[in-house]
Length: 119
Image (cartoon, rainbow, N blue to C red; front, side, top):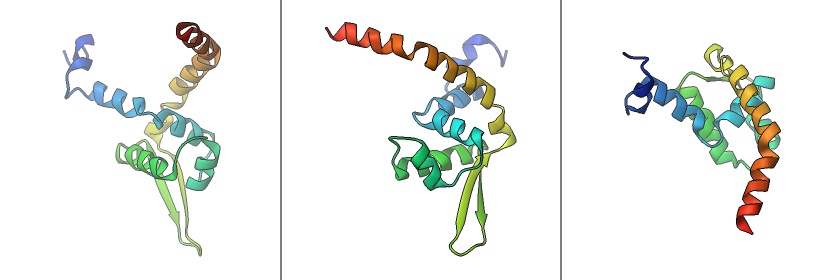
C-alpha cells in the first residue's frame, strides 16, 4: 500500500517529499553542477547563471539537510569550503541527465509555444 500510485498525493508521503526537494527551482541545476565535480560556492555561483549567493547557500543547505549534498571545510588560511554529492545525491545524476536531455531536445518547442501564445 505504501507504494500505491495515489500515495504520492498524501502530504506525509516520502515520495512526495523527495519530489518536492528536487522540484525546488535551483535544486536540479545545483545537483547537476555538482555531478561534474566538487565545487566551491563561488565556482558554483559563476557556473550557474542567475542564482544569487544567498539563494545558492539556501539551496546547498537544504540539499545538505536531506542528505543529497555534503559540505567539506578545509583547515586552510583562508578557509576553503567545497560541496559534493553524497552517495544518495549521486543516484540523481542519471535521472537529471535524462531530464536535461529532454529539456535540451524540447526547450525550443516550449519557447516557440509561448511566443505563439503571446501573439
